[in-house]
Each structure stands twice: as structure tokens, then as C-alpha cells.
View 1 (cartoon, rainbow, N blue to C red):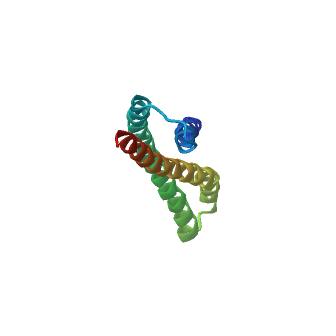
View 2: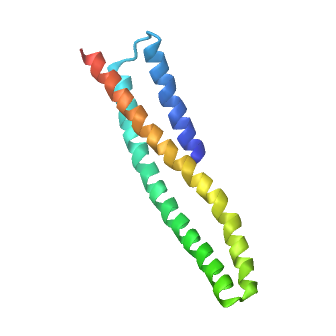
Length: 121
């Protein structure tokens, strides 16, 4: 999913760079890209919500296994703790990339709308 996100960001940046360099992009092309971006933002918001829920679940399981291990001194519970940590840390980085990518889409959406509105003037 992050590949699709990166591709969408680069496509929008490319269109904005073309507009900034003086090449006029048609209002229809801008409107098409804005509508496409609005649709993709919806998809990525859903993806972000699902990943947040999974991240919270893994965080709870990680800290619960740690608490059980420390409070009851049942040391074999350290194995699930280590396994959850191995999964949790990369998942946090993945969610971070997804969250920042969606924020970038919001920014690009606003910039595309500004370009479209300037075209009308």
C-alpha cells in the first residue's frame, strides 16, 4: 500500500511541478486529478484506521505480556513479549510512513485545488 501511496504522491507532485514551470495544465486535467486524489484519500484513510487498530492491539499485547512476565515472574512469557516487540517496532515505522503519506496527500489536494481555482481567474 505504501507503494501506491508513493506513486500517487509523485504523480501529483509531477503535475504541480509542470504547472509551476509555466506549462499550463488544463482545468479538466486538474479536476480529474483532484477527484482521483479525493477518492484515494478515502482509501488511505480507511487503510490508516485499520493499521491504527492493529497497532493498538499489538501494543496492548506487547505490554500485557511484559507485565505478566514482570509481575508474576513467569519468565516464559518473555518469549511472546520478544515476538510482539519484533513485530511492533517495524509496524510503528510502517504506520508512521502511512500517516505522513496521507498528510502529504491532504497538502497536495489543497495545492491542486489552488491551481485549479487560479486557472479559473
